[in-house]
Each structure stands twice: as C-alpha cells, then as structure tokens.
Length: 332
Image (cartoon, rainbow, N blue to C red; front, side, top):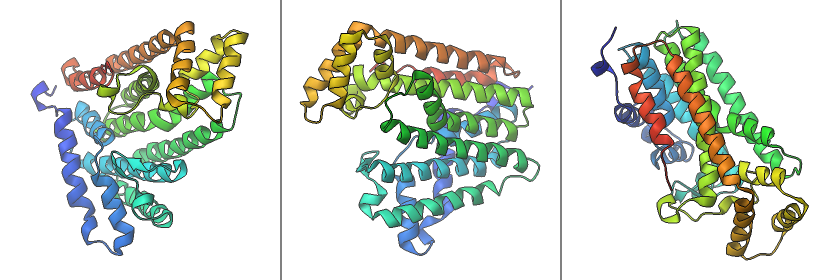
C-alpha cells in the first residue's frame, strides 16, 4: 500500500496544470491570432484549476503514477473554459473573473469560433490518453459534456417559465455545475486504475459536493458579507433568478406572501436595495435560509459518505477531505 507522503497536495496539482496550460497548448505560436489569442486569454485570466486538479488527485488516490493523467486533466480545463466563453455570450456578460469577457474584448463571432476551437483542442488533448483507458475516459467525458449542455439549456428555459419546482432546479444545477466536478473525479479514478465501484463512489462524492457548493452560492448571494464575498449581494434577487431560496419561499409562502413575491419578481421599475431587502424579509419570515443550510449539509454529508466508501487507505483520502471541507467552510 503506497504511503501518505507519496500523495500529491491539491496546490501541487493546480501548479502542474497551470504549467501545462502554458507548455502543452503553445497558444502564442498558433495562427490565426484572432482565433487563438482569445483562447489563451480566457485560460490566463484566473480560475483555480479545481477540475483538472481533481483529476490528478483522484488518479493519485489509487496510483503513485499520475503523469498520464495530465493531458486528460487539461482537456477538462479547456472544456470547462470553453463552456464559460459560450455562457458569457448567451448571458451577455461583460466581465469574467474581473476581466472583460472574450466577446466584449473581441466580438461575438470571434468568441463563438474561439469557443469551437477550444472544444476541438479539448478532444485533441483527450485523444492523448493511454489507449487502455481511452474508451472509458471518452464515455465519461462525452456524457459529462452533454449534461453540461443540458444544464445550460434548462437554465435558459427556466428564465421564461413560472412553474419551476425545486426538483427541477436541483436537476439543473446537478447538470450545469456538479457533473463536471463528478466527471473529473471519475476520470481521474479510472486513470488511476480504480475499479467501477470506487470510480462511482468518487463520482457521487463530486456530485453531492457540487450540489452543496451551488446551494451555498445561492445562500451567500443573499446573506453573505459583501466585503468578504467580493461583490454586491442580492444579484440573484435583482435578476429574479429561480434559486433554491426563491423556489422554497414560493413553496412555503401563504397567499399574502406569494402575492408580495410575485409583485417583487414582476416589477419592471424598482429600487435595487429596496427590492433586495423586501425579498430578504420574506425569506426571513419563512426561514428559507435555514432550509437551504439544512439541504447544503445533507448533500455535504452524502459526499463525505461516498468518499468514505472508497476502498483505499484512509490516509490517501485526506487531501480530498480537506478540499471538501475548505470548499464548504466559507462563512461569508
């Protein structure tokens, strides 16, 4: 059984990916410049490289050799950023990670084509996987990629629907957010030689952790500390996003509270601060914050239970335990 000191810390995995983005893709030398400069740009403006780092961590959970997992891990990072580039176009977003979005810095046509190129680059990186692992890896990658698209479409559909339920919302965030974390872990597990049970336990760990994290984001957008959060709170309320909090409020509200919520959501002209405070007041009356925190905790405990079920020496799982705890320990 490999010893604990042979396992990689998360930071080392992130550093490896950061270096590989520069050396493996060689984007500065690719032509035409207007196709590849936006790719280099979006990959260079930040991001914590969590998904590719999880590939390496999951691989290293079962094997001391992880070098063969670097290219597939990088494929997931390129794919993830490709989805962000196209999401920004669909959302008409001006900023990404504190910088101009690609379609604002260049234009929409360039952004669309650069995104297409990124999807192809992701598959090119994936094709460099060892032949013995490629069919299984490709199956997980393709399923994950399609589900992310499913989630984005549901998210857009919900903007024009009034009858969205909590189950619908949870399914949407599972697809849009969680499956990429889960898929990264499962791909890493397969590359590390894990059996099907262990690979699926890690997938469930990531899926439940992702759900808990997204619910926490919903909560913090309304009840977070602006100074620690790094942006103005209440953005989801202003945009009438169908978050868990809003959907739960409609579910629990009496007729008067429902009417108030409908009025606030449908208002065309409003004072931003007053709208946020009015919705928060209803949330407080209905104790939806407590409901959200309880559901966060439920998914988090499910994730830890799945990690616990992975049959490797417990010491090798410590880095993933720390990652989960850190992800869910934000108090702002």
